Length: 98
Image (cartoon, rainbow, N blue to C red; front, side):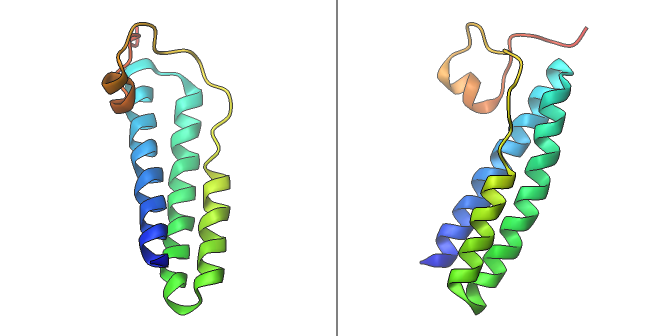
């Protein structure tokens, strides 16, 4: 069960990282680039925690938790004005790079 929790956290962080990359490519806002880089570091740490879960579950889940704290993004520019829920979920923005 611990491995499933760790892998779920890994895929969620990876999805949010890919979403940040897509928003950065569309808008060019540097806060989304910074968020994507944080997401890459966090996903690597979470993957290490998922591997460590097999050896010692408590330590592995602690590493996963630290990786989730690393993934905090901070303040961002507003890129969604009239987008629906699915568009926001997938990272489709209303603003494009000039």
